[in-house]
Every structure is written in structure tokens, then in C-alpha cells.
Length: 282
Image (cartoon, rainbow, N blue to C red; front, side):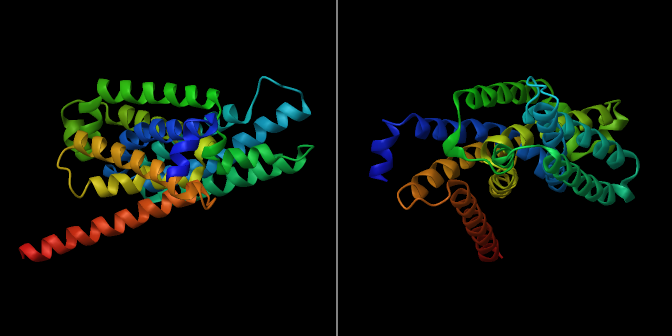
């Protein structure tokens, strides 16, 4: 730990990594709470794996047709938003086919991406970096992108807190009160898609899914309000990402994998503690 504390004061890449973890925690804490409470974690998974199609198409256009203004993140955002809207519409009006559509989009999105990658000249290592991320390779531009994402999410969360609360906990009652549930549900899915895409390009898909769910699952066991879950899960996410960096630094372990293991162990410990406390009261 002492080595990390010494080096983080000297090296910009470590400072960027710590800031990335903190900024990502804000987005994961807020959106992850909605995802877990609304029980749409599987939708976030599906969206995350659909982005390969858009990224592959963007890279193909860039290298074959020299559309240099198009970069993989643009394709990822477009494909994720399209997937979110399709899944949301099916979820609202054809629930019995929801899992089928998610699986189909997941498979087709990845297949389309692989086809475009195979037809794109050159070695596409950068695209794999977008998919799996590396928190130690975050640039200043990535940090500003995370700041923008956090600003959008915080603004939307504050502006539509009560609406999202109603959609997550009792959409039927909200519909009876005249709230356009469909609009806010689709907006929530689009925010989830943006969060998944932006964070996946920085820290990787697997870590994003873990950070969207595990800290919130822990916070949900001890928080009684939605905003409380958001606050606790944000703090936990920041703790896990920072601790993962510290623990993995000296032995040169993968930082993302270490963070996920810490979060998983904490979730197991919190669940066990909750069970023990409940058993003791009984």
C-alpha cells in the first residue's frame, strides 16, 4: 500500500485511475440502484453485449471508407440506445417475449460486430480494449467523458426522482395517477445504456455489470430509502475500485478483476451478516 501511495503522487496514470473509479462510482451508484430495484439487471447485460455490433460497424467505416470522424464509441452509443428502446418496447407490450428478444439482440449484436471486425483491415486491438477496458490506461478525454455522464445522470436523477421512484416501485399506481410510465421507463433504459457504454469503454463490460449490481445489492440490505441506497452504493463502489487498485498494484494483478472479487466477497459477507442478524432476532 505504501508503494501505491508514493507512486500515485508521481504518476498521472494512477491519478487518472483513482479519479475514474470515483467518477464511475457516481454513475454506477445512481443507475445501478434503479437497475436493481426495477429488476432489469439482465437488460443491462443484454445492452452491454449489443454494443459490439455498433463498434465494429464504426471501425469498419473508419478504416475502409475513411470516415475518420466516426469512432467506435459513436457506434457503441447508437447501438446501445437502439437496443435499449427495442428491449423497452418489448418489455412494456410483449412481456412473454422479453427474454427471447434480449437473447436475440445479444447474439445478433455480437455476430454483426464480429463480421465487421473480420472485414476491417489491420489489427483491431483498440476495439478489444473498448470491450474489456483498462482502468490504468484512462486518458484525460475519458475523464471528461465520465464527468459529462455523471452530470447527465445526476441532473436526470434530481429532475425526475419521484417519477423514476414511481416507475421502479409501483408502475401500475403511477399509470393510474396519469404518469407516462412508458416514457420514463424508456428514458431510464436509455440512461442505463449510456452508462453501460461509456463505462464499458473505460473499465470493461464485466466490471460495469458488477459495479452496477453488487454495491447496490449490499446497500439494499441496510438502506430503507432509494436515495439512501444510491448514496451507500456510490460510496461502496468508490471503496471497491480504490481498494482494488491498491491491492492489485504491487503484485501486478488485473485491477478490474481484483475490484470485482472484492465486491463479490463484500456482498457474500453482507448477505451472511444480514442472515445471521435475522436468525439472531428470530
